[in-house]
Length: 98
Image (cartoon, rainbow, N blue to C red; front, side, top):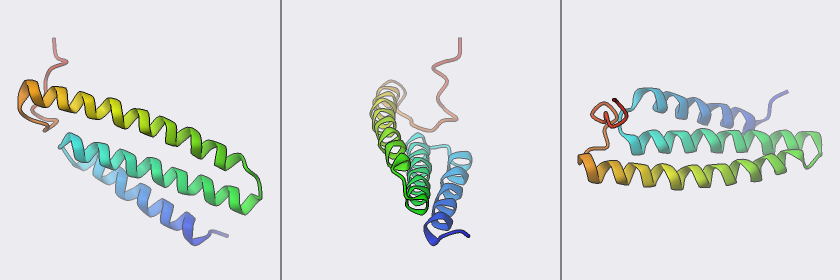
């Protein structure tokens, strides 16, 4: 028995995973990663609602905290790379190569 929100969560996660693999722009990759995290949040809330417990809500708050920290750090890295290389295309970035 799957609910509509769980199906929506799977669709959103699939779209985010496909965008994460297919895209080369760093900002779009970060947006796809956030979409995947929000899909996981939606699934946790749905499971929590179906099983009548608050454990899913605790996981959601933890994921939201990690997502906010990840977004801040990742965007700071992207801005720094853009200032150095004038590009945010992941194929053109080779700063980590020795």
